[in-house]
Image (cartoon, rainbow, N blue to C red; front, side):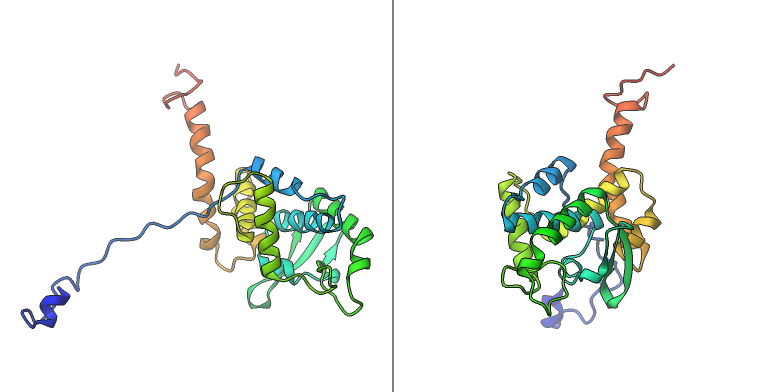
Length: 222
């Protein structure tokens, strides 16, 4: 049609009033729970770098943080006794997110054994480099890629994949969508709802196993 218009063979495009096909929404790639365990266990906590990275990975997955939120976490944002952290998301909006026991323990070990040795006095961020400065997004990206290879994970992994995995695993475990929206810091619940499509794979497996008329069902219709 564009050629016909350019050559002035036609004066108007008859397809202007026709809606184009809707593009399918790409679902986020997530790690399985087994892959997450392997990734979290990959850092060697017997080394300084591994001690920091284990705490970092546990924190990111436990709270479903964006990479920018993890890098900007300050010491004052961590409340280990109450089991919460304060994340600063888009638009400088803050939210409280629970921290599970494995993440709290990993952070405690890092704070006790390493951060005082690495951090410069003026540095307020939680996770620091060996030079004593706040950890950069690029460094975090590299470390996650490194541990994915160490864990034998073939998926194209990025820091945001941990956030996707957190959300999917929460829903698969029965989390309320509104509660998940709050934890992720989404302004609109429609952004959170994409994870219902991902976790729907689990529902299909349950349906196939237990519905009396589903293929592969272990139940028999009465």
